[in-house]
Amino acid sequence: MATSTAFGDPDAGQPGVVELEQRHVLQNYARYPLVIEQGRGAAVYDDKGKRYVDFISGIGVNALGHAHPRILKVVREQVGRLVHCSNLYYHRYQGPLAARLAELSGLERVFFANSGAEAMEGAIKMARAFGARQTAGKCEIVALENSFHGRTLGALSITGQSKYRTDFEPLLPGIRFVPVHDAGQLEAAVGDQTAAVVLEPILGEGGIVALSREFAQAAAELARRHDALLIFDEIQSGLGRTGAYFAFQLWNQEHRPPILPDVLVLAKPLGCGFPIGALLANERAAAAIGQGMHGSTFGGGALVCRVALEFLAVLPDLLPAIRENGRFFRRRLQTLVDKYEFVREVRGEGLMVGLELSLPAKPFVTQALERGFLINSTHDTVLRFLPPYVIEQKEITRLTDALDRMFGQIQTPPPGGAQQV
Ligand SMILES: Cc1ncc(COP(=O)(O)O)c(C=O)c1O
Image (cartoon, rainbow, N blue to C red; front, side):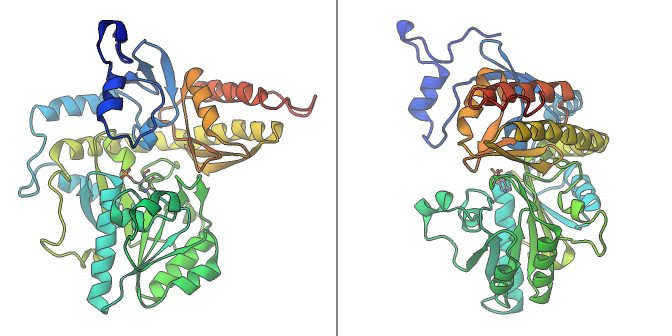
């Protein structure tokens, strides 16, 4: 492992990588004091060789963990063959990747972008163009309070959290926000001027909150009644994270007719760390975008599409373990809910898991780091866990034991009041 110059060596007058970042990288990120050198499976190693179990996977990106052998193999082959050729030409992988995503989602057409926000921008443009083809002024979008759709101006405009928005206003006009699970306000907000209703089936940054089937059904019916697009943002919840290919499919397991989006937006795990976003649309929505109306220089390059195809080839075999390990994880976290008063609730599906506290969650993230675990907090009081799909139960047990010890320093459980986790 490298000797550490990461934090600089003032005696030698040499700035380390951290100091260089602090001097020269835009000051928009609040980083933890950790320099990650490499990763293998569900673990990463810092510049001093200390091991951390990765329960956040680059915020839901490294779904196959680090250095997965099948991803390594295709990357090595493809880098020497063709990385990028632009969208002026065809290459071997974009068509097959679009076909596979279409097969999994039931949505026939795909546009490839480079990030979640960029794919979301495509969805907003599609909604605008779809509305404009019907009547002038049909350009409104209905979105949810507490949602998160990305940092670009369009995606931010439909993000229902003022802390991300206020510095950049005015944003897009014609956006209406509705509280989660308030069907009355939803009905009042959707009308003939609505071009799209946008939902995260499970709100991620909003604190791991799963929408009820009834609320999603109401949104789908309103969108249909007013000839608006139903857009699902599954950038965080999609592609196996919940143990299903897409979280919306969980609504449809026992119910007919199924709730189906017109547009589905994906990103995070698809490229196993290589940047890619995807906008999937049915023919009705896709027809709004003609030649030259949208594009991306880097989108859908040969390397990233080949990696994404390999990811989708590995994924099916992992789905049962995602479901089983997710249930195991949530059961163990539930024991902490039963044991500590300030631990309020476990939420989530599969390996998209939140633990709601009645205290600020961030100090526990720092403590977990010291104990060798990468976890994350969101929405102030929620600990968020997005481990790689290859996480094992022994690592989940080690984390929940460590959380138990951390929580025990805050509150002594009543004697005999709860069993050990
Ligand atoms: C649900 C959701 N939508 C959109 C985004 C934005 O994606 P990106 O950061 O790749 O632009 C995120 C990122 O966390 C997300 O969780």
